[in-house]
Length: 205
Image (cartoon, rainbow, N blue to C red; front, side, top):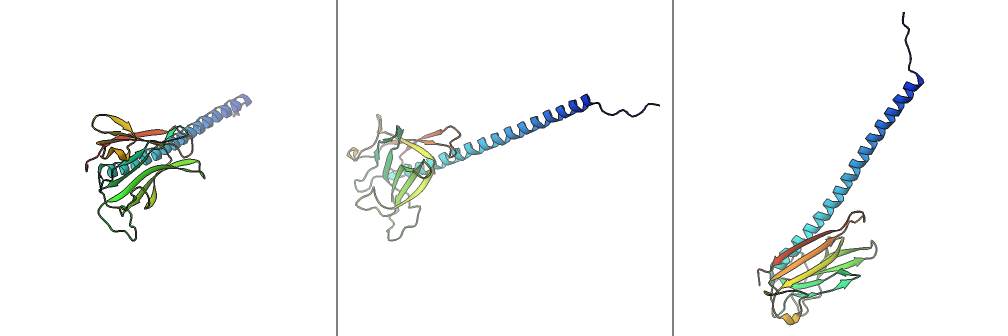
């Protein structure tokens, strides 16, 4: 009669080692999956912000108009080696925000610029809107956040023959095409920045 044989110490150690290896592999796979999901989430947020900012700027620029000899103006600027251009113009679009004590003309002043937020050490793309077109079309109105974590705004202008940086008041005309380039960074400072660009024709003239 054959008696029941238990596990030897070697077999128990081998089984324990295999179980540890399996658990380690499972944990590594879970960690890798979580990291990949976090990475994808960060990139998706950056892409969404960049696309939304480009879309908003494009709509305004396409409808840019000359108004009482007021033309589009852009300053070619840099801050700490990064492009931080400004853009101000009159758009043929109605104001997006309700503003008191303003007479609606179906047009509004619009401005775009980069500003640093020292609290979080990041830059924002801001949009200025003034529903009343006054004597100073490049000041006043309401400023809202258009693109969080936008560190650069680079603008180029096509006059029909050449591309140029900046567009001064002395031009006395509207550019035909505005090239927009913005750089989005990861709020957690983990992923590489993403550059978004688009060429926008001015349709309204």
